[in-house]
Length: 301
Image (cartoon, rainbow, N blue to C red; front, side, top):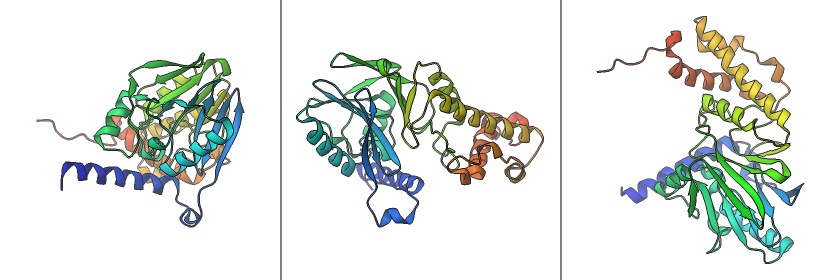
């Protein structure tokens, strides 16, 4: 198998994995995903494709779009933009990170003069894996300010949290924030948090809370407020602390899954992921906190 073929197979496998994680309901195989556009105010709009969400911002002359999600969704959105806003070009296409269930299909939105923007780590991964999307031609490392017809928009990297080069998008004059995957509201994180950096996510959420925003639009949950983000941080810290407590007490994973009830969050969505969340936290913490006796690292030669 050639290197080129290997890269394509790897990307296809990763995309299939995300399809399983986010679209497990059998009805998805029979019916097309629900699609909609909702205005959030201040010329900011939310795009829905089933369980995935992105946003776009309309300026007097140009449009900033974000994650295309997939080629079909991007083509549908392009047609919607033309119908609603006429010939305004897409000046910026911003990728939140490298995961295929968010950034596939960028070629259906990008024009020849569109600035395709991402963190440099996301751009490198997309090219390395021959991702089926338009590749970024504008990258950054920490922060980048974009000018959409006189409107300032900030992109910021918060460190490792979920995927490569995952960033936030902030609109200061609207006090609006867009974050994908590593913040979800009023629901538990996906399954065993395999794609998450657990401690990094906690650090990133703390950093986000220092930003002056009122409204946040996540990539996989309801729109919410800063108070909702604080609640999510409390969940993550509670999960971490309870698992570390169990590790200190010498409990096994199965014992912790029985004892850590997380009852305060039983009314949240995806509460059925409780056991998987505990396992995911344990799997990561047992590596970073091995001194607690739950794992012995291999001998170093």
